Structures are given as structure tokens and as C-alpha cells.
Image 1 (cartoon, rainbow, N blue to C red):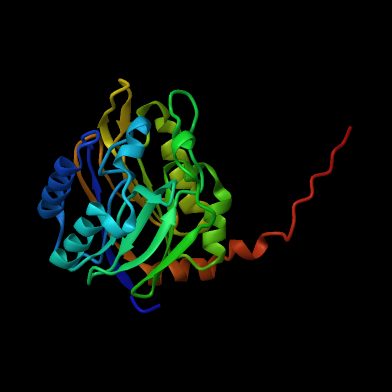
Image 2: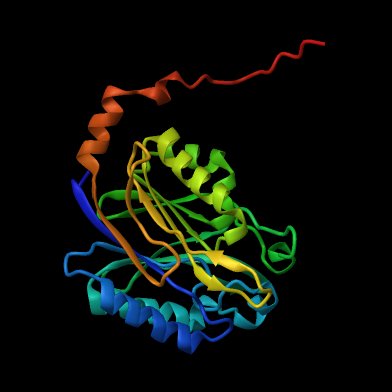
Length: 272
């Protein structure tokens, strides 16, 4: 563990649908207004550059080799001397499209990508009609801190978070565009992921209205390894921030070694 403490800030915003230029300007203004000099990691929400509008995904897609979004994030990283978990954008690879989180280091280098593993296509949403699901969870090591990456609908699958914890994750992150209509689910699931894995959890979502008349939740939170809320924000645009103390987390894990009690298998016996 290279760092005992790490300073994190996450930006909550209302994306302007299908208007990258306006969203770039909005993000930079929000960062400039909220970032502190000693910030180590900056996090953005899912699809911040285009908003949650499935029918706009294909026209918003960018290949890595010609991506205005990646270039923007690299410039932000260098300008503010900060590592970035870049929320997500629609990434075109050959003739496939992915909901991709890019990770950029302080010098503007692309360190890793995570392609959303679970696609939401229920009720009025149709992400799976446009987007190809990713194949693997991804941990990124940022200056000695191991971070497990997830996007929105992934939060409903505890298996991915347990896999991250077993692989050594210090921090779990979910970058979302989560609906107001499922607020109970968001609050319960994000807190549970922190508690069951004894891991810091950053749960960042968009806020604001959508073209369908629905609304994003706009209740972003940072939890500690016991599920305590370190910071949160309601429906306004702004930021949440916290200093994460990894030493305290590892002390807690050493005193309460619950993962040692996981059984190799859980074979269910049916009584008829």
C-alpha cells in the first residue's frame, strides 16, 4: 500500500442530451469550482458527455484513436494534476459499441478501460439494443490504491463486487445515470456493497431531467467500509468529496475477517 490516505472528488451533473461541447464546458466549470489542490482522484458519472438517451448512443460514439472525450479528459488530468475515472462514453470498436470507462493518470496517459458488464434494457430503456457488454471486471491500480470499476446497472450484481474484494480492491466505484423512480434500490444496493465487502464505496450518479420525462436520481454518496456516509449530495449539481483512510480500513478488516468465513460452495438442498 503506497498511500495511507487518498483524496477523492466526484462530480454530480445534469448532462445536456447529445451536446458534448456544452457538457465539456459544464464539467470543466464544475471541476474548477469544486476541486481542491490535493485531490488525487476525480470521478465523473456514466455517459456524462451525452446523457442517458439510448437512441443517441450510436451518433455519440467515438473510437479511441479519434476521441474528443478522451482528449478532453487527458487535458483535464494534466491541468489539475489529478487521476481521472472518466465516468463513461460510447466507445466504437470496429462495428461494436461499448459503454466504456476510461482511466487517465495525472500525466494524461490512458491507464485502463472498463466496458460495462451488465446492460439495462427494461421498461423504456434499450441499452442492450445498441451496446455490447464487456467481458470482464477491471481493477485499476492508481498510485498503489486498487479500485474496482463498475457502471450503473452493475450494482445489482453483488458477484462482481465480491470478485473485486477477493482480488484485493481497496475502493469500489459505481458511475451511473440512475433513475429517481428506483431511489430505494440505489441507496440500499450501494450501501450493501460497502458493508458486505468492507470496502470504501463511491456511488456517483447523474441528476436532472431526461427527454422521456423521467428524472435522474441525483443522490451521490461516498461510504466507508462499514457503510457510514462520508459525503452525499441531493439533486443539485456539484460534488462529493472525502479523504479515504486505507489504514483504518485494513485495521477494521483485520479485526473482523468475515471473508474467511465464505464457503467454497453453497449447494442448496431441496426438501420436497
